[in-house]
Image (cartoon, rainbow, N blue to C red; front, side, top):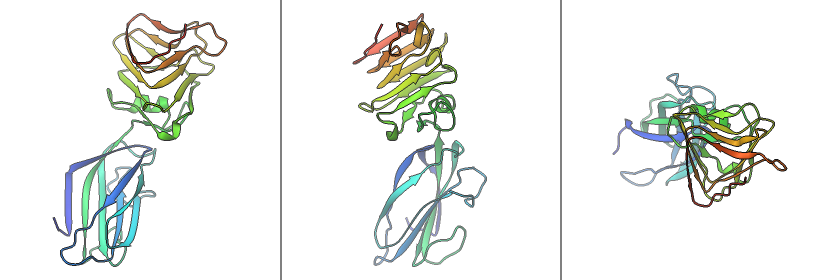
Length: 252
């Protein structure tokens, strides 16, 4: 519908911190097609404006038809609900705040999630450690396509599940998680769980449970679990419950 300004705040668009997302803006003309310019802003730090560096996330035009591009969500974006603004203006680029006679502005709710691993390092935004701790409990932890065929290292201390953890790589991504100079990758205490899918785990220095120490609930799906090269350690120590599905290669 045509309106100079619309607040579609009940429409929520969900994105991942550190992710890249395709956006398409399609004009609807009451008469003939016109040259239109577009801009999109997001209030990533949730301070009530779009004036901060990096908050203008898309610009296009002039165009008489739909425009398509990519928006990148910064790793530093504050998680939760914030405001997304889309502006279309006839014959010149829309400014951040202005009144104009021909065009339209629409606001949406943007939900920013911390659920995407983008880094192979053991610390910082986008690391497996960071995302595992800040993801909403029970939501899947996803892995960026740029990590395909890469190795994520765990070098500080073992990761400890504090809820319902789900590490869910896509099939064929060939992502390895390796404990380096540390006892293991992950420990699952009593009352907590971890589900691991389509990953390769290589253990650390512990004699037992060099990759996984499970006291709670563990699910493995199409996941390989090995000790470090040349090590005779046992990669999984299990005193809880464990379920194994699909093609899993577990070396003892």
